[in-house]
Image (cartoon, rainbow over all chains, first blue to last red; front, side, top):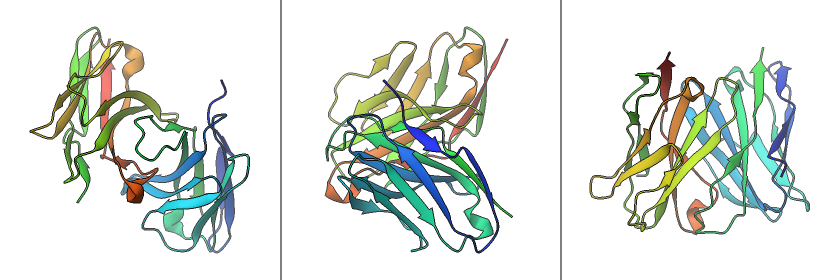
Length: 115
Length: 117
């Protein structure tokens, strides 16, 4: 069974640009969550998508947005990039049952560097 | 407030010995799940073990076991017979059940484990 696939693995951008990251979940999983990982702030929840709808959102500015397609693949977009957006972005998929005990399964992440 | 605390930034263990990684959590909710993940230097997060708040037995998965003490709000990970490949960062995480918490894991700051040959 294929795992969670994130593309690209590495990205280098400059301040002010925008970027789109992609995540393909495990087949059958309908929930995709996104996280930002930095040395200073650790792992922080960005948002979760389920059946093409944003179901939950963390405390990030509106520059961070996402969407989910009918095949459950998800994209995350960051506009007007800032130096502080340099991070490892991880996506995770799960079945998405609201009170499920099923774990989230993570991709390898996209490492974004802002120059 | 919902919070996970891992007080050990770094740990060393001798190969083949057991090691305990500490995790305490804070939530006023009654229904939640606790998870442990392993993150090697390559970056991927690998799910290790899960414990539900209503589970009476401590979870075990191969060499991993979770020492769950609900009254103390602790969920320590025990790795038995450490191997060199266990060297990684370990994260404790919590998911509180309920519609306002869907898809959201709250992570601790992590513990770096180094296994010595």
